[in-house]
Image 1 (tube, one colour):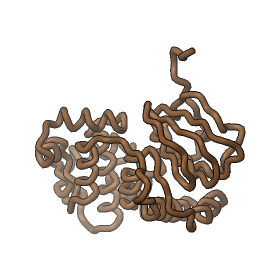
Image 2 (spheres, helix red, strand yellow; image 1 turned 45 degrees about the horizontal axis):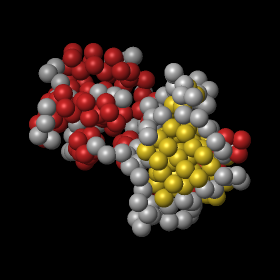
Image 3 (cartoon, one colour; image 1 turned 30 degrees about the horizontal axis):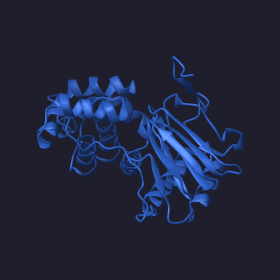
Image 4 (cartoon, one colour; image 1 turned 120 degrees about the vertical axis):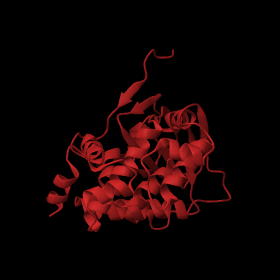
Length: 269
């Protein structure tokens, strides 16, 4: 019998932004559900079965990583015993980092439903270290290394299953590779030879966020970096990011951070 509603699960305590745990063998078979606002990466070293995410089915061939985006609906059927780890990451953990490589790699890995690995390599060691680490800066470094190794060790002879939306992917590539971030969805839409409405629809299908919301994540992170690492005035930073004036930039920054740029700068000391 099909449920009238989709179950929403929350495995993260409200105050925690990141969690690592050994795979619980009692969860070998799950019913369709989604997660309460976090990305889940499931590292499987020994098992078999299948994983279904948003109607797309992937066979389990270990070692592999299952990638469950925060808005996706999924379930799996795995054989016991299961050897692996589960990593949960809230969006705010990524947003608070000033490391744009973390944002880029999260975007890249989120294009896949499953990544098949050539070998486990040092990934289990990184997960065990991350399991024990409480310091936010150290967590960021380990998480960055983990993403890099996962993407580097992807088995190109196996067809890793991925979501398909070229427009969204190209938009993310522009944000990650451009020399600077510009506060204009229309600007990026023109580069992609489409309309802002089409671009936003593509983003919504893949992430449940509009193009403006995705762009805001990059704008705020770049603004924080410019405030923290340069001697530019707030007005100069506003100009670099494509705002018409300092006032508009300050209002935008406060909308997403609850601080004005000047307050954020003072906090950094």
